[in-house]
Length: 432
Image (tube, rainbow, N blue to C red; front, side, top):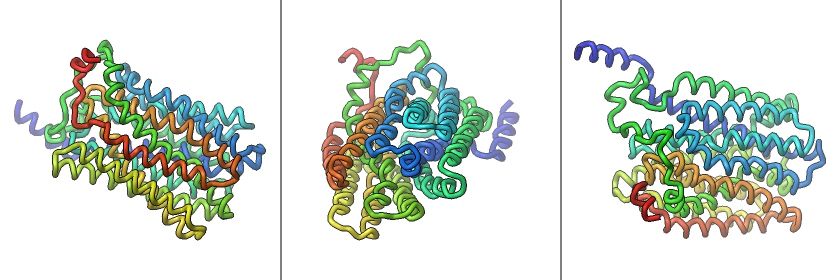
């Protein structure tokens, strides 16, 4: 029997490592999600011209995504608990794909608003479900890495979107980009469902060596009650920090192409290039952020140093570089400062997503959803406030200044996070 088992293990080693495939699939998911999310920002000017939208109206359309996205943060953990990450992410991928394709058929503000709502419904539960998927497939000291590398893929999607969408706009109009991006989402959903397993111990390609360091399967079942109130209390400071991070991210994702076009008079190609370069800086920031945070954790064993202080420093850097753009009109200098600002902000991403995984073993998906609720709320408020302020003042200085202030608030709020205290559901539920 032992000989047979050894032969099976040897055969498995000749196959592609399932962890590598899962990592690629998760990176592809984040890449496609952001490709679908930000392609509208470069199409915005053509939409405004075709349908006669004002900045406030396009800001409302931008924010439509965030209403169901906000709700999805709380439903994603429940979906995983009921159906598992495999089926949950398959459903999300299908909804995202179909809603993106539908965006290519819009006829005005109402249909655009509906398309963005549907996209938010698909993307809302995605990241909390993906966090639950990661929690079972990676050891604790790799949390920052996997969150960083997947979110760097999302920023790569943001970097690819401007030149890609610009290519399709010049080739066949802005609608074609949405058809292509939607088809990619549907293809990903099929591949994910075919390969992924909720329990890595049950994946036929996993060896005993691959399973070393992984946590045993969670004891949480469909019948288990989620200690929602106690967990929400623990996650509230993290949610507030994520709101501040989300505010800044939505500024970059939603308004950067229009900033280059309307403020500095760049054409479509040049604005797409600079927006893409800024997003590319985020790719580097995401990857390094998670890796550096994990490295600090391994070296010191102090989660508050690896998570809290690291995030606070990144906030200060991001706000400082953005503030610098207000004191120059040179487009080269502004582009460099925006790249440095976005790089700094993206150092936060993988690190803050590791926090709910640090806090909760059994409810990582729910905790991640609670945290990302702040991001979704920022997605509702930030685009509208930004658009209204631009329309009222005719200037981009005021909304940029507000964003700098929010970075300072985010840095202060990191003090109240406690990733070093594992969530004990029974103890804290009773205490609550």
